[in-house]
Length: 398
Image (spheres, rainbow, N blue to C red):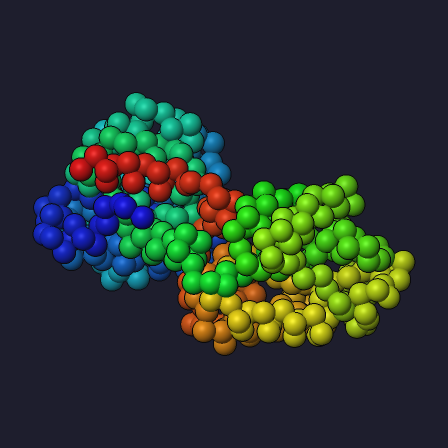
């Protein structure tokens, strides 16, 4: 993907004494007292910030936090806890600047955090005047927040239009490279795993992938709808009968390309959805009216694992069952292990998928773990993300 990379600018000595504006994703979870409960996104932002500081730039960093009302500041919307954590992990003061649109006092070798960018009126609508004000603050704009790359907002898109230089930070560049490797230039066979509660929420993703991948594995409630399409009983399982024809169309799309959507041959059922529910493994054809399908069975999992072992590239979005309960975690655990041990390049994204990766401790065995849920899904749909588009356009302008 042809974009200007911040790492290249630093290596070429073009960053020293420049005002660098970094759009990071520091939207971290907090408890009721405002304490940060998980700081992965803050730590993920550090390479870009350190790169800028080491290159001798005057560094400004901003992010959104939560869903504040524009122009209506509330203490719980403040990035103050983030500034404190950034100071800790960087080992240097990171002052928080509240009113920053009309100018920021920061010297080369210093870093400041600009208050929640979504508090600025016009941010979400990508107001041109606001974007131009942001762009006037800097010599170099660095987009390093993949989780916001699917949104054309003032701090993610507008500023990139008007800043003297607009480039991709190391985190965003890594996402671009992984996506290109997995979807645009994949090593075949290309296998995609798409799971979730509803076909409707991922229908466009399934159709887009069905036109490109060599194997399409479905799981969760989505698999139940495909089982209906194959004429199998699903009892009282979560499904969308009204989308059975759509599922059949996807199966046919794959068949015409010489590929397939494997339908479970066995499943794990229970009569209730709870941590105490008793799990029963049954053939897919023997699901009873009172059964709920909560996982794929061991035979199905073994078949799918064998497919993964033969793949050249694996794209994974969604667990195969209710993996939070151990009795319904077998399918997800087996596939996670298969991906971890596969020589294929693997890319995974989505909150539930990341939780499964963490649960089974396979982070280091994945080719790439995407940090942006919504952005990752839009890429799978075949959409061009606004952030990618504007950075490519700026790069082509020279």
